Image 1 (cartoon, one colour):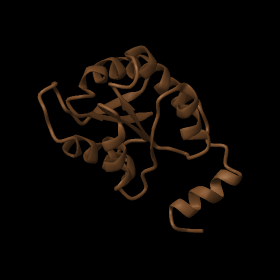
Image 2: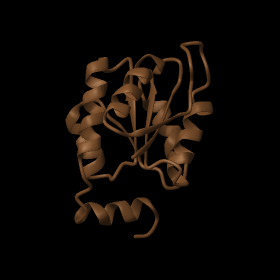
Image 3: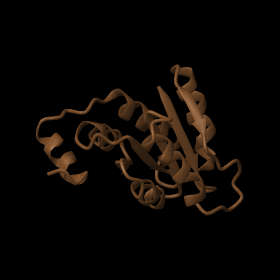
Image 4: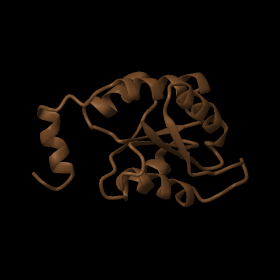
Length: 144
C-alpha cells in the first residue's frame, strides 16, 4: 500500500517513527514534510498529502499535528477525502469501519508515540463495513 504522510512542526516528532513502522510492514511511504520542528503553516504540508490520496498517487494518508484538528480540517477540504481525527484504537477502527476514512489525523500532543503506532495499526487493520454506513458515506459525498 502507498501511504502519504505529512505533519506540521507540532507533529513532526512522531513522523519518522511512523514512517519506519509503516515501511517495516511493507508499505511504501510518501513523505510530504515537514522536515523539522521549525514552525510552519500546516496546510503547506497537509494539503499535498491529501491531494495525493484524492488523485490516487497514494492509497491512504496519515497527517500529524499538535491536536490533529487543523490537519483534519485541511485534509477534508480536498474532494474525495474522508479524514478522521483518531485518539484511541476504537476511534481509529471506527474511522475505517464506519466512515471509510482514507486519511487519519493524529495529535502528537494528545497521544504517546506508542499509542500513535497502535492507532495506525488499528486503522490499517480495519475494513469498511458497508451496509448502513455506505448510505451515510454516499450522503457525505453528495450522492444521497
